[in-house]
Image 1 (cartoon, rainbow, N blue to C red):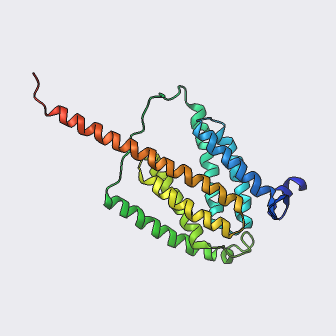
Image 2 (cartoon, rainbow, N blue to C red):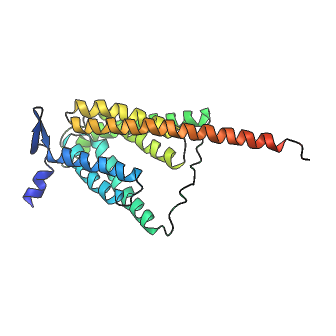
Image 3 (tube, rainbow, N blue to C red):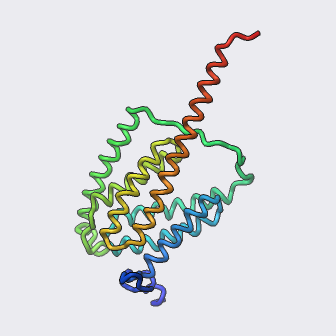
Length: 235
C-alpha cells in the first residue's frame, strides 16, 4: 500500500530528463491523458476508463501543487467519465458514420452573457479558493496557488464543455484560451510535461476550430442554396 501511495507523491522521482526530476504522478497522469485524447479521436469506448485513471493521477498532482480549482475540475471529469462510459456502453447501434455535426454560432448578445457568466463565476471561485485553506485547513493546509488563473481556466473549461455539447463553434475559442493559459500556468508551477500536454491540446483545439468552421460555412452555403432553389419558379 505504501508503495502505491508513493507513486502519487509528486516528490518521488521516476526518472530524470534534462536535469528535470520526473515524478511518477506527473508522468503517468500525462501519459494516460494523452492516451485518452487519442482513443477519443478513434471513438474507442476504452477512452473513458483510461481517462478516469488519468484524472486520478492529475487530481493527486494538482492537490500537491495547491491548484485547488484544477483539483475540483478533475472531480467533475471523474464523475462525467463514468457517465460517458455508461452512455457509450448502453448504446445499441453505432452512429451513422456519414452523420454530420450541425455547427451553429451564438448571437453576439448570447456570447456576452456567457462572458459575463464566466467573469462572475471566476470572481466567486477566486474568493472561495483564496479562503479555502482558512475554512478547511485540515484538507487544504496550503494557500491556493495562482487562484484567479486557476479558477478562470476551470470555469472556462466548464463553459467550453457545455458549448461543445450544444455544438457551438465558440467552444473551440474557449478551449484555445484555456490551453494557452494552462501552458504558462503549469510551466510556471514546474510541471513541464503537463504544460507540453496542453500544447498538444492547443493543437487539437485549433484543428477543431478550423474543422468546425469549415462545417459551419458549408452548412451556411447549403442553406443559402436551398433557399435560392425554393424561390425559383417551377415548370
